[in-house]
Image (cartoon, rainbow, N blue to C red; front, side):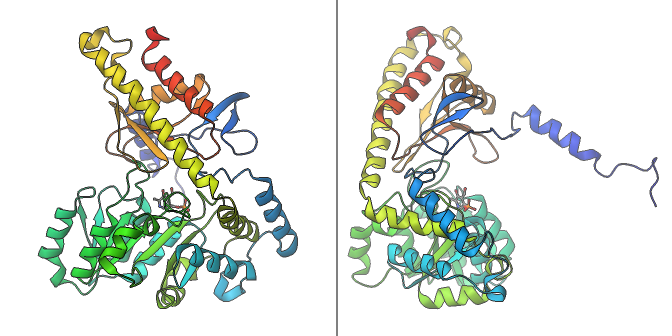
Length: 425
Ligand SMILES: Cc1ncc(COP(=O)(O)O)c(C=O)c1O
């Protein structure tokens, strides 16, 4: 029975949206036209794209598009059901074997997204008698996985190994199992986790370690295998030739230009997840097109290793250009009173430490981040303005691709200078 005078149970939504707007936290999507790439078209205007996680520049690659089309023609558009109930395609297994080979693990399991890989794996590995220790800057899917698992979760300050050790000392013995969670490359910062020290603590305190390689696989390491390869020589010193025991999660949606997530590790871990990870068991498998594209991207990474060096060169070039500009800028700023600056709301500006393809410029507040993002867009630069609650302090997040040219990067720095120091351009 409905009564038009009864209170509207949804009335709070408008109020809540109003609060979101007032805090400059409102989010909306920006349409991009045409094929993915280092430059795209937005509202008919060309834009250099620094907002994409397509680090290796594969998402618009003709060869991967052809593979996706061929797989669709052979197998159809959908996986039609969960892999356990409806059967899977040989492509699914081939992809898992290719991931295991890239990561140097015994086996791998492909989930329908990275988010699902994280929540399902964490919930399978720990429960309410267990402890999770999680870096404060971890991705939302790790944090939500921790909540869903029912384990007691304690957060340690970002990359603070001493604090992690204190937590282990003070709490580990009261729990059955312990799982340490960390991003490999922190996606909204760009720095790399301290994996050797974390693994060392894991060994000392009989704790599992799960690393999220969403922004490190296809980016770090000699062959793009990610953090374990990046730290290979340090890890060899501490563990000799013993295989590195950890749960390596990643996504197929960034450097591998497709959709889906994975966990790579020992064959017993993978077999266990196939039997216990709810977000793998009770969801539809990856579509044939996505599976074929991811498989093709891993093969291309191996055939075209120059893409990795191009990505590193581009990232380093950007950091050098930004630092030169910021050093020059800060040398000039102390002579000016803040209210004489061209736009005092943009001061100060700080580049965050990075060892990856993500370079962030921290700004004063959310409104500044949005305003800068919009001004850069007007100058043909597409960049993500990241605000709370995603990050504690607002920033411009610049994502570098192997297929950017140095001219693209120069264009970005020129646009930043024009927006932040208009008198000098
Ligand atoms: C660190 C990290 N983990 C997990 C995910 C989720 O991956 P997916 O987009 O494949 O669901 C993301 C995606 O933004 C991420 O940045």
